[in-house]
Every structure is written in structure tokens, then in C-alpha cells.
Image 1 (cartoon, one colour):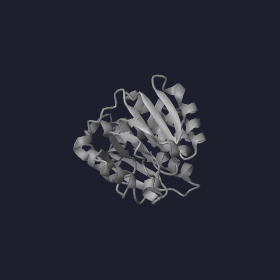
Image 2 (cartoon, rainbow, N blue to C red):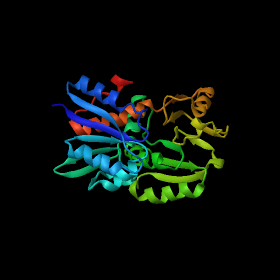
Image 3 (cartoon, one colour):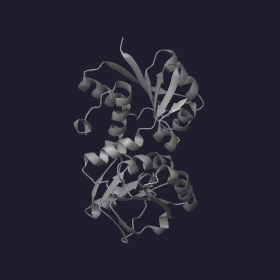
Image 4 (cartoon, helix red, strand yellow):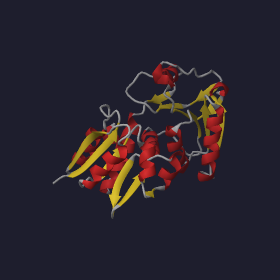
Length: 262
């Protein structure tokens, strides 16, 4: 019988995880079954426990359950502890393990584009969970200075205070979105503003060599602005594939090549 895997979320229709994991498995010569699992907003734990009780091997977690998954795990990786969110679960010797592969997915996608992260200066727009999840992997990959810009400055400052001790080799700082200026190697949009029509205008005083939009498959005013400046830019599809590859590696011990699926 095929090993059982699933992605759990609410909503879940939009998830591309099944097609990605089946494509990885086919490429690596592994047989799996991977399904979407819709959990009620107040029913994540029960749904997840049923899955593992029925012999499920691994589960991906998407919005809005990543924090609940984090709280449910008895064993966490370093990057999951720092992210305070889990998107990859597996049971080992009766113990629920959790990891967060989002940040590694972003790093892999950036490296696949040959954008240099060594000694880089990075600006991240937004101070929510998506930003928290990528700081540690970006620093591990060589980022030197990361500036977090958020509409509510206090939230960005709190994130810097929370994370600075986890990344002692890098400098973290916080600014308000109204203070955008300076020169950066890379600017990452981790807000939903560019998708909601609540467009964030990047001022002329802000200079950058490359732009990464974490969302994918939708029109983005953030990418439009990067395009208008003639700057290298991409949406978050590579990150989606990258985080899925990392989860696949945790479960199966083999790592498909990212470039084969872009």
C-alpha cells in the first residue's frame, strides 16, 4: 500500500501541494498518495490526529493552522522554533515532529536564480509570520543586514527584538513603511498589500537590484514596479516548490532538483 501524505488547511482548494509531491515522487521513483484535507477552523487538531492514527506518514500545514501545528509538536527543528510556526509534520516513534520549510524554500528559489545572498543587504516588507519564518534561513545563507519594514513600526521592532539573538552574525533593524529608502541587494514582499489593491508605492529613494514577491500566480503591483525599473524580479512559485522539496526530503531522504520543476 502507498504511503499516505496530506496537506491540511482551510481553505484548501487552491493548494498545489498534491501535484508537486506526486511530481517529485514520480521523478524519484517513489509511490505515494497525497491528498488535500479540509479541516474545520476549530477542528485542526482532531483532523490531524485522525490522519496519523490511520497510518498517515507526513502532513503539510497551510493557512490558518501553522501556529496550531507548532503548538502540537513534541519535537521541533531549530528553524521551526524560531519561526513559531510549522508547515511540515511527521510521526517518529510515536512522537509528533515539526519543521518549517518556508524559509529554506525561499533561499533555494533565490539561489536557483543565481541571486547572491552572501553578505547581502535585504529589505523585507511586512512583519508577520511569513517574515518571521524566513529570517533565520536567509542569514544561514549569508545575508548580512536585514531591514524589516512594516506599517506599524512597533510590530517590526518587536520582531527584531525576538529574532536578533537567533541570528547573531547578522544585523537586523526595523523601519516604518513610510521610511523606505536606501540601497539593497534584494527586496522581498511578505505583505498582501500588492495583491489586495492596497498598493504599496516604492519611492525613488529606495534602490534595489532584485525583487521577490512571496505570493504567486496573481497580479502584483510590487512586481510591476520592479519591472518598470528594469530590476530582476519574480513571484513566489519557486519558493512554493522549494518548501515542498524540503518537506519531501524530510519524509523520503531524497531531494529532487528545484530547477526540474520551475
